[in-house]
Structure formats: structure tokens, C-alpha cells
Length: 486
Image 1 (spheres, rainbow, N blue to C red):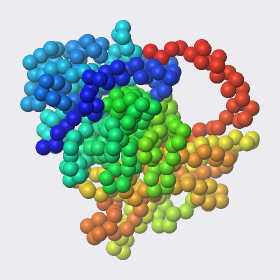
Image 2: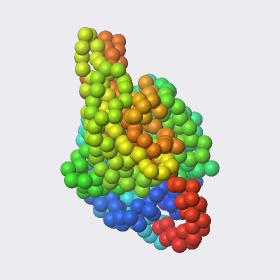
Image 3: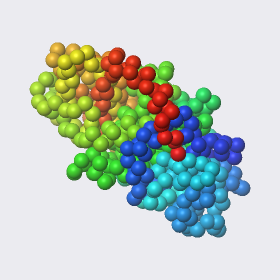
Image 4: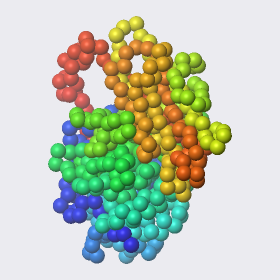
């Protein structure tokens, strides 16, 4: 059995790294901006799971309701034998300071000592002992009530074979139940399981004093997926989980438009939106075959950006083409921000599959010298029971000239990302490509003819120089007038 351990081995020494991190540096994850835009986005109606590892026999796994400012009956405890209870204290477990600090950042309600967490209005908190959660529920493929799962623990001392197996188990569960697992990468060294699974979100810590694990994974994939501010990944992870809760609430209530709730609430899309809204820090870099930075992933969490991307709405591709990859300039054009959840299918012909591409057209023609920065993220699942993934790529073309501008074509990742600053006015073709080839059973790389993907895109206008100067001059005043973060 692999031993599950809380990410900080001496959790008691790190309890000060709690929800107060959100208040540092103004609004580092965009939470106050989102609160100002829509104060009803608090996680209302959403159930969240928080499995917690026991570090030693004298430690516990339970969140103290008083620590997080939540009613005792809102937290459901499940111990290592599957016994449940909702009162605190109780006879099925002991308090964990680590669990309390994680909970503060995720759903902590406003109290006298700390600001509130990201999603203080969640409907229920399912607080599991982590060994039972993994070995009985996840490994046993038993449904749970929560769609968002925060995992601030690692498989301590796991061998490579054990990590591979754990990742497969999590990916099978995520693809079967549409569950989003959000896990800390570890506090140093290589990215550890369960954060190294394909279908989850791996979270690093962004802080000058942090010692966060870095990628790539043991098999060369890009992890972490995203970072958030904290000195340890146990406490950066719940910020991302809380952001996912807010997006799920917004999706289910139809913020992206009528008829979008089912697509908008898909875990693949929630992941794409979170990664697409992240802010690139200084030193961020990636390549065509390594879509995310090995330290920062897609960048620093910004839930405000991700929400705006969700609210912009769902837009279908203009057309699909088979065979050779080439830009098109025909069909309806789309707004500069939005998303899509769609399926792409390769046709079987003559013993192999033919590549298929979906085209998203944009007309960014302007009368001035306005420039744009494109951020676009493509995600899909490692399907249940599959060791490999279908190979999807993401391209940007100048639609008028057919010139390729950028691509993300990692052959091993199930996420691709484009980040292209300085785009001039014109017409653009954003292309999702599903590569063809022989079936996997025949030694090829096509796992299945059809694949469902989530695509988020944002062509953000870059301010004109004169406008930028005016905005820069106003920044000190805006800083003075800004409402303090709670």
C-alpha cells in the first residue's frame, strides 16, 4: 500500500499560511474583482470533497468547523473504515490543523482572524480520510457526491509503478464520473502522484519562499498545470479548487447563456477555463512540444479572467476538414472570447484513420493599429481504461494568407496551449486537429475514432500606447481607491 501524506510534512509549522495569502498583494487571484462583479458567486449549491491524509497516529484528518467558520452540520466526516458523522468533535476521527488551513483557503467563511476563502457558500464539505477515499472509493469506482475534489496530499514513497497505477486509477474515475481532481504537485523535487495524473489539475505554489515541485512528469508530460500564491502547495491547491467551484456554480446556473449548463459544467471545460485565465508571470515560457511552463504551468490563477471566459459563451467551429492541415477563410466568424465543448472524429479509410480538423474563424480587422494577445487552451481526457491518449494539436493561422503563426503539438500531453502576443489586425483561423494513423491495437496512436475536447480562447486587445500611458498614470489613484481584499 502507498502511504498518503499531507503535502507539508510538518503541517503545524505552516498553519499561518492560510486564507490570509489571498489578501497579500492586493488581488493576486482575481477573487476581489469577481466578488465586485458578482457577489453571489460563492459556491452556492456545490458539494466539495476534501480528503485529508493522516501524517501520524496522533494526527487526524478532520476539519474543525470553528476554524473555517462553517456550521458543524455542513461538514460530513468519513473515517478510514467508512463510518460517517456530521458532528464535531466525534468518535470517528481527530482534528487536523492541516485540514483546517486547507479548508480556510477553499471555503472558509469570514471570521475575526482570517479573510474568507474562495468559495465560502458551498452547500456541503465531504471530509474524507484519504486512505479510505483512494483505496475504497476511487479504486473501487464508487460514485461520490462531489464534482470538485481538493487533494492536498501526495503518495509518499511511491515507486514509479505505483505512481503509474495511481494515475491510471484517478484518470479512469475522472473520465467515468466527470470528476475534477485538483492536487498539489509536492513541495520540492519531481511532480508526485496524484498530481501527475492526466485528467486532473496539478497545482504549484507561487511565492518567493516556496519550494514547489517542478515538471515534467516521469513520462515527459507538462505539469504543473497552474500556480496560486502560497508558500506550500497544500495551500495553493485549495485556491484553484475554490475557483473551480465558482465556475461550476456559474456554469450550472446558466451564466454562459441558455442551454449551455451541461457543456459549461463539464470537467474538461472547467480545466480549460482555469488554465486559459491564468496570468503569465515573468520568466514564463513554453514550446510547441511542451505546452506549459515546468515551474508555473499555464501561469498564476485568475478566477476573474476564467469567469469572463466562461460568461462569453459557447461557440461552435465554422467547419471541419479531413486530410491535410490547411487554413480556411470561409464561414461565420466568432467573438474574440469564448469556448466550445465538441467532438472530433477521424474517418477510417484503407487501414488507418485520416486526420480531422475543426476551424474557429475570427475577424479582428480594425481601423487602427490595435494589437491582440491570444491565449487558447485545449483539453481532453485520457479515456477510462486506456494507457494512451488520442493525439490532438492546436494551431493558429493567418486565415487570409494561410500562414501558420503558432502551434502546440505535444505528442504526450492531453492539454495544448497557445500564447501569442502582438497579433496585428486581421483574420485568424484557430484549428483543433485530431491526428490520424493506425489503431492503437495495431501499434498506432489512435485510441478511438472520436474524441470530445474543450477549447477556451481569448484574443485580448493590447491597449494602444496613448491609452496605456493614461491607464498607467491612473494606477496610483486606483490603488488608493480600491476596496481592500476581504
